[in-house]
Structures are given as structure tokens and as C-alpha cells.
Length: 444
Image (tube, rainbow, N blue to C red; front, side, top):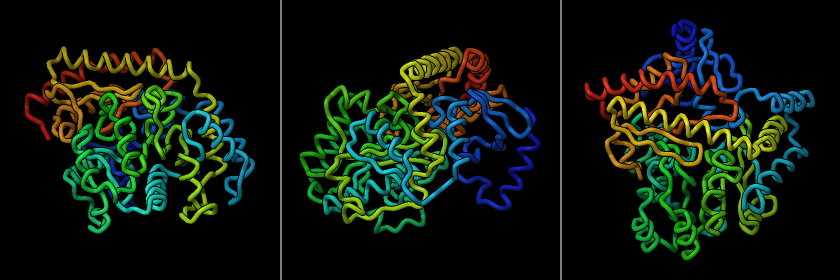
């Protein structure tokens, strides 16, 4: 597809913005070429500034559960904007959105913020304030936003760009901050037990993606989250479950609905974002009432935000959650299952080593001959050259994938039969391109 307008806009962007983008993974640095500048989205489709159309399998990295420009969400936002864009006072939609979140999850009280990074940062501060401890445990490959102490061995854009593949963190984060973070291999119970045996009385919290999607989709082993919750309880630490990505996407109750609600445990704190904002900058953190009571103005742990609970963002989020019915989740699950299965089938037919992994309707493909990907080290060893070829072959055929081998693929309830068929039609040629690239040697 020709893209001279995107080329021109990217040149302009690089003159005024580092790397030409406002979030690193958008730059196509891992796959090469020019990032497409999008002009609009409708349902399952994106249209770039050159007029090219793509089936969207990024969905704004998860929020667009209903697809782009859903008419009822647009109507709610339009009405909210007409009333005013920000007041700096409480509003009724803040309360209604909080009630909707409590109605779907085990949290007892919730506070709204503006980004997933802000949600996890605030949850960590609250956990430290509540316990009087400093150490935080996280897992390699789990991304919790660009919080200083949580960038150690993070996934997402850091994995994509080859930054922080060890336990060190990104430049600009003091060693003293990184030293407060214990990084462990994901899905490794023995490592968790050893860390708590040595540092248990100093650990404020353990934070984990409820089901990681930022090193590709790497689901928790059976019972792993329950084990983490119990380990934290025994040592007086808080269990923080990051559902910024999975919350209200993989089920009506998020990842907790797939494991905690079934197994009978709850996190002490949870973080949310993406779907609950309906495409607007909105996020939240919540949990046990006694822990949340430590927040100002009720308690001494300070947290604030001028745009927290913004009336336009809360209108979008409230409309989205109210529209996220069982029928919506059934359609998203169906579409994701079809595309994932057909992608694996095409790669198998082309002889491309790969592993398909899914959690609910989030899935990704690892270009590896490993039997499974259970941790960051295995994810990092995949053939990114094969993915690069696959990505561009799909893009040329009108399918927009995440421009990184370390991200989840997302679908929406707006992905109709025409959109799905375009994806399926593109897969065989893309698989052959990956096969050719893999035979030439393109491993990380």
C-alpha cells in the first residue's frame, strides 16, 4: 500500500518529537518502515492519512472492545463535551463509573486516575503506606507502566526496543529506586518462595499482571495467582493484581473472573485501565476498604490528579462498560478464536516454528520452536526477523497487527465476517513471508 502522506507526517513528527512518536512502540522501530498515521477508525477498521484501510487487531492496545466510534459511546461523549470538558469538582458520572467497577469486581472501594501508569504507581505507594514496608516484588516481562521502580526487566516497549533485558532498569531511574524492586522469573513458585523467605518482613507488595500480555500472552500457570495471593497473605504483604490490560476485556469480570472468582480468592489491590476508559485516558485502582481508607483525604497517603474522573472520559467508560454484555464477550471470543486458530494453521502449513498462546480473547504468536512460553526469557528468544516479515506482509494486505513480537493481539465485537475474512485471506502469504525470513536467519 502506498503511504506518502504517512512518510511526510513522520518526517514532520521526527522534527518535533523524539523518535516521531509519543509512545515508543508506535515508531515501527522493531519492524522497520514508516508508522502509519491514522486519520479515523470505524468499527473493526482503521483508515490512514493516505486513505488505506486496515482491519485493526490492535484496538488501541485493548480499549476498543466495542470497536471504533461505537454510536452509543460517541453519543455519550458528545453529550458530555457539550456540558463542559473539565470542572475540577466531583461529578455524578465518576460515582456511576466507580459503582460499575465495583459491581464487576471484588474491589470494595476505588479511585479514578488518568492512566495505567498512574494507577500502578498509586497502588504501590498505597501498599507501602499501608504496610510500612519498602520492597516490591515484580516479574520479569510484566509491564506496569513507566513507574521508576517497576521498569526493571519490564516487557512491552522495553522488550520491543531491546531495553532492559536483564534486571537493570532504564537510564534515568536511580539505582536506589531500582534496588527497592525484586525481579523474579514469571510462573516460578520456587523463586517466589525464596524471595519471601529472605525478605518477607520487608516486602510491601507483590505486583503482577493478572495474565501477562506485555511479553506476548503468557498466561499464569494453573493456580499461580492463587499461590501468589496466599504467599502475600502469609507474609503480611499486599497482593496487587494489575488488570489494566485484562480488566473488562477477557471477561466481564476481567482475569479475576477466570481464576479468582472460581478459586475463591481476591487481590488486596487491583489496577484497571483501557476498556474502562472506552478509548479515553482513564484508569483506576481499588481494593480492600481498609487499605483504600489510607488514601487522602480520608488517610495519610497522598494521591491526587486534576483530571482524575474527567467527565468526558468517565462518560465514555461508563457507556462502554454498560454496553459490554455477555453477547459482546461471546462475539469477541469467537472472532479471536477463529483468527488465532487460522493464523496457527497457516504458519504450520508454511513450516514456520511458532507457539500460539491465548488467555480469554487475548492471544499472540511466538515465532519460536520452544514447546511453550512460560516466562520472559523464553519470549525474548523468539525469531523477531520472522515476525517482522509476517507483520509487513499482513500490513500490505490491509491487516494492522501490533508492530512488536512482544504484544497481544486484540479483537472487538465490531469485527464482522468481512473483517475476519480479510484477515484470513492475508494469512497464507504472510506465513510464507515469515518462512522465507526464518530460513535466512532473523533471530533476536
